Image (cartoon, rainbow, N blue to C red; front, side, top):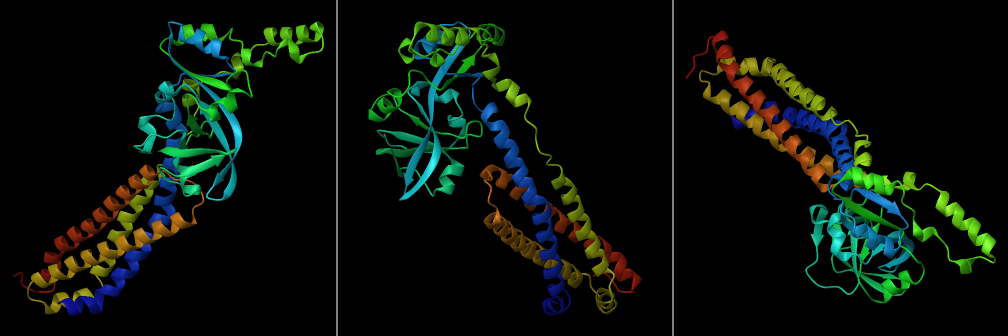
Length: 373
């Protein structure tokens, strides 16, 4: 029986299993993984953080004032700079976020819910990076990066910051922080977590970023300074404040329903191919000469096993090749979802074919005057 199956069915099983699985992965599964990853990245920063608002250019005194407000839960001030980094001898540019509000990091996008890997050691100047940054630069926990002569150590890897595209240096003291603070009189911005949006909105409508107010020494005359001050005081900065709830509501998600259409097509194609092969002359000849259905069951069980093995190999190979050719970052969680769906669809398709084939055996044998043993 095994030799007969190898001669009459194995090659066909390999061909259609590989073709169907390859087409399914390339046309439906890979785009699905990319789209799910894109959607998760769009939403993740806003859903998985506690940030309510992002305000521009506050001073340290303004942050202290914000913390004293009853509607404010937490505040995270940050500096942002475009920095030159040396990574394993390669020089690159990156957007660096530096903050001395280390006790409030958990409210930001660099929180434990979005952490992929964290170091267990203590680092003098830790660096939090996104997984995309880690992959692009071949970085792992404990690796060192040089920035303006200062050494930063990769302490944690997170899902990418798709809001500002930053990597974070959380430090409370040290020469690196002193270097940043000496170059500015205010934070670049601050994240705020609130428990009363109405009260927060009322407060923020009159917010003035004192970090943008220059000192009198920056002007040659009192008149010039007064012009600057009046322009600063009269301006409205509310439109520069980002509401994370508005951002989340405004996210446009990419459609991912194509995977279900493709899955249905795969199941249908598998059934059609198997039915065509079921009624071909090779199978009919076997039905005429075989007295027992036991051999027929073995024939189709071997077919199901072969289909499963070769479709699985084709799916894994195609996924790997598509991954190598893909230049964009795709979250591992999205790849895992796609792999689960692929496994379920292929297994269900092959099992459905086996069930249909076995159900039709009795009819096929009887119609050819064979006896069922």
